[in-house]
Length: 509
Image (cartoon, rainbow, N blue to C red):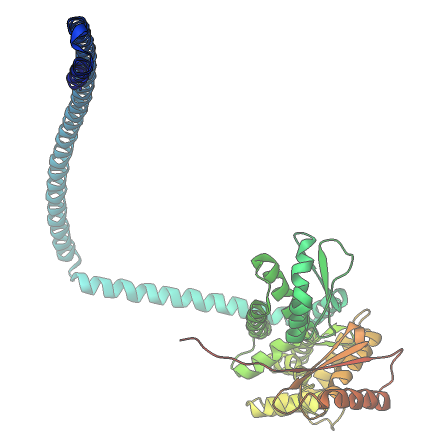
């Protein structure tokens, strides 16, 4: 490039000189030629200087590039050398490890061969000793085993017989004392246990902002929760807590578990609420079965129908005058068994009748009639003995006594119910009033669900969309309110809240 610039400058000077020579007249031609020659010389010199400068700069740049390339090559070679040294070290380490592994394999192989040889020697010695023992004893190994087993069995039978006789004599000597201890112990357990029930449950929240998420946009979450559970969800000024209110302990427990799972999960919306409520309902169903099985196991009862076990488990969530029905049934079973043992009767049969005597209370809200008759019919349908059925049917003196077990169960029921602190009549009356509210609401056509909430001050009614229309909602609310006024006695006023729900379900495939 420097050389090109020099040529261009020279050409420009030459052209300029030519023009000057053409313009000037003949008189000044010599002077112009001289000046032109001078200019050409200066241009040539300038071009030469520029050429030399550019050549010097190019040489310097080439020198620097060579130095950089040499330095980079040197660094790459150093790095390659370091990598080669590391690979050599790793290869040496691998060789040493392979040598150690090979050495250990040789040692293990030699040890295994030694053990096999020793095992073979021991087996030969055992065979020799067995042959000698058979020669000395005059019988084979199988015959000796048979003799030894026969003598051991005879000795064991003798010891078992002696032990059984000793236990039988001891049991006979202490029969009276044990019978008295059993009945006293059962009554003592009844005296200290008191089943207290509550109508509210409190669920703790991680923060105050969780209350807003529970309420949801325009209250859709809280409405969905209350509609699906039939429980009143109270959100007040209590810090980091919400209250669940319902007279039905099963509903309240389902709502409590569902709410706790919603708070932990954090995804609070109607679909998730419905999913967790269904899961909590399934858990409660499993708990009902588990409680029934535990009660049967505690009583030592055998061969009982699974439907009776499930119905028995439902008594855990039923209360009579404030007394837990399942705990009361267990108490009656213990006391009945103790009384039967004292009288020399069938203790297991008495325990069975005592445990099942209040079976009808688990379903008396579904079937009309007294719980004694309902329970007796249920026990009869699932194969219980006549003595058990009659004891269930007559434990409230509804029928004439035909068996001693009926008297035993009635006495045990009276003992369990009459102990101090066992029952509270006011709470039972309160629960019956709430149940009556729901019964009145559900007596109308088109009602799908009815829930008494807020301590009986409100009843919420859900209508079936296919059987009613929007125009009948107000009329139905008016009719329910008038029927409540006519059939019930209550303090203050009761709010009747009727809603009609329409659901549509489709699947994206």
